[in-house]
Length: 256
Ligand code: NDP
Ligand code: 8X3
Image (cartoon, rainbow, N blue to C red; front, side, top):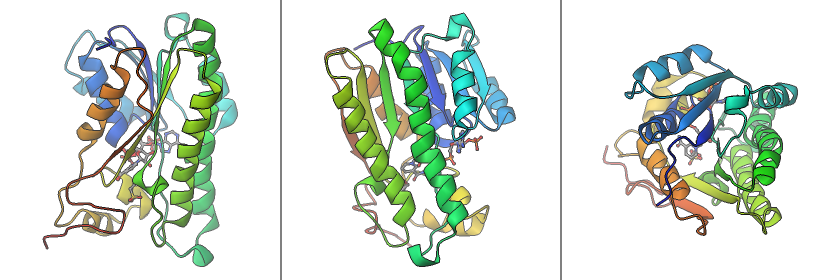
């Protein structure tokens, strides 16, 4: 097993859910964390909860969909933080659950700009340094939605199918280097995801998880940690993980 001790790990979307859970797992393993999200105060609260007092962190208030902000954030990292070993492209969101022909175009733009373009910007600005240093690992957070389309999921599913294709393409383009690329694709995880999807309607969001035992953010962080700690000649290309209560995007065992 590879150690992540003193490895520099950049986690996007670290202010909540899966990203915050990753911060905890990697902090406990002695990694140095660059935590990025738009809500800086949430990142500040998170680092207070990280148990080891010796955790080294660097916070970035960053909107991943803002190309020039991403370029500037990466190119102006302090020297002690600039050699990123592991990039976890986790920032993402769904907006709305509407029929395509009735969808809100602003919702589409936000999903495409964040889930696809944001992930691409981070990759484009971080991976050249990995290539130069001859080491690195990119973990993209996809979704079961990138494998199976569900009614009204249209554009969100499209963005996650794109993440899947981009992960595969990046792996191909990095062939001949030691840099690894993994896609971790969960089913239902209880986070702020549904609240964001329904624009803050928390009653509707709670119903998504009613009567089922969803994955927790820690479950997903464990799998991400597993991927990056395999021996250096092993590349986990893709992991699909689902709650036992979920067989597909549309087949969910609800007990109530
Ligand atoms: P959360 O809503 O809890 O977390 C999403 C994170 O993404 C937040 O930290 C948010 O931070 C960040 N984020 C959103 N937009 C931007 C942006 N423009 N710039 C920077 N950060 C941004 O949801 P999850 O933890 O569930 O989502 C994490 C990833 O997991 C997403 O890619 C999602 O698609 C994926 N996923 C989620 C599943 C689920 O069922 N929950 C299942 C499969 C995949 P802030 O608002 O502070 O910027
Ligand atoms: C999130 C899971 O099934 O709501 O990616 O699309 S789903």
